[in-house]
Amino acid sequence: MNRRVTPIRYVCYAERYFVLDEASMAQLSRIGVSLDSELLNRFDKFIAEKGYDNRSEAFRDLIRDRLVGSAVVASKSPVVGTVTLIYDHHARLLPEKLADLQHEQHEIVISTLHAHLDHSTCLEVVVLRGKSRGVQQLADRLISTKGVKHGRLVMSSPQAVSRHSGR
Ligand code: NI
Image 1 (cartoon, helix red, strand yellow):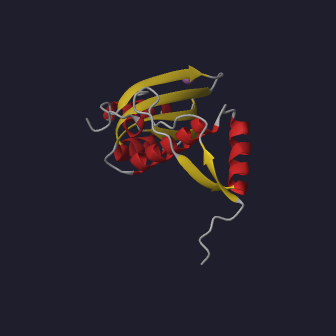
Image 2 (tube, rainbow, N blue to C red; image 1 turned 90 degrees about the vertical axis):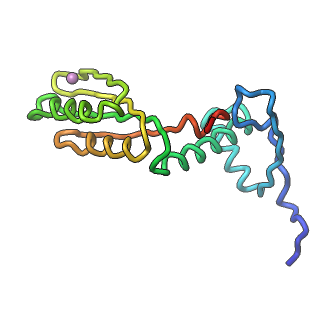
């Protein structure tokens, strides 16, 4: 196999120092990444659409996203999450059922925001913190409660993107 670098492959250096944690500016590392030009073109188009000023910040966000994703998948990882629920205020006993579920798991529920969107529609955002599995299970129960029209869980792992993780 010909191991020479072909003309379409080249090294794309990040414009700025490549860091995982912007707060720890004393520990900057700079890396070079080899990409084929077609992939780089797609990446540049993607980050332009997303409004990034430069490739470095986009690289950092992609890496953080993957690290968070890995932590969130691990069932015992500490995570935070928000569950957004849209439901009908008039659905029989639904507000009570949702409140009961949150009281049962009060050690996971940090806070709840409730907004009355119109005469019958409620928006509720429940902030959760705990082990990944527990947070997902409670979110599933809230979202699957009869009468909830739409629900979505978004999880994150602050530790997965912090240089202080594990200390
Ligand atoms: Ni309401």
